[in-house]
Length: 427
Ligand SMILES: [Zn+2]
Figure (cartoon, rainbow, N blue to C red):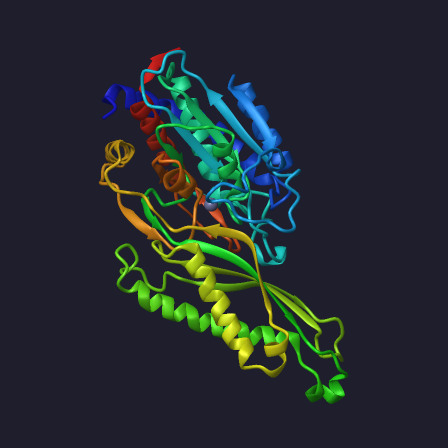
């Protein structure tokens, strides 16, 4: 447990840096770092890291060979020349403690119709205890927490006594390939902390997630004789209904799952993007639907994929046109395994102590019905991958916002964790 004098020094440092941290987060939120557009945001971060004297490795995903690695997700239509990743190394001259990866993603999901937001999504406004903005909550506030936790150590006259890698990645919201690239590039540590907005809790379990595209054909005819053709959009709709039914069956199985039996409806399916048809008075000749479905930890991806293929094949068999023109299922994006953070790691033990000390209450845990990058470390590289971060609201929704008091507290908790896990040395 960090000694009380050290904790007091870190608290003073977080306090002293707080205004700068808020301004830094505001600047970070101003970057509309949607998929493929993260470059300027990452360039700014790289400069910020270099300005702290950290050694910076900035690269794009097109430079990294990783499609042979477990955990890799296929990507059809994204230019990885634009996918900038940043890894800063804060080296300790002698490794006296345990090394650490601090990792956060800067990619954000699309904001939707701007007029539905109270404040503009990329113009962060502070209202009382909240800072709004797309990505403010998920997870740019967490990125600020890990960076200013390191700054707090520095301001207290300390540095970690083992190497720390401070990483900002992209592709967390669609593949996880940003996180995987850091591992493909060789970065390793004794633990990885990902300050996703977990509300000051530990994420014990994650479902897996798969993305796929349904591609359906139709027979275009004048709508005056619609019965002589087929409608690709309605054919796709039939497939969607059957996949919803499959989802309900998987949720029945979840009722006995060790980590998800207490969670209501953990497996969710979403037709997220639909395209199709060419003309209002022609039955649609084509339709594509981009979909997301969860899977339970313990179900392997091949089995889960086969369930989708079987469901689509069965639906097609019962349709005169699709039986002869089978729909395609294209795996494009997340092929993410479920992940359990195995209880009992040293890193978790240290986090429990430091959380207790900072929050004055025991660390709670939950099972998540989404995914996070922590799986990459834990599942494939034997590095305990821990998600633990601040509180906020509106992830992927309108009026997303970070809760600033919780961010401040969590920044201190992360600083205390770094100090205790890595040990400290004077600078
Ligand atoms: Zn996130």
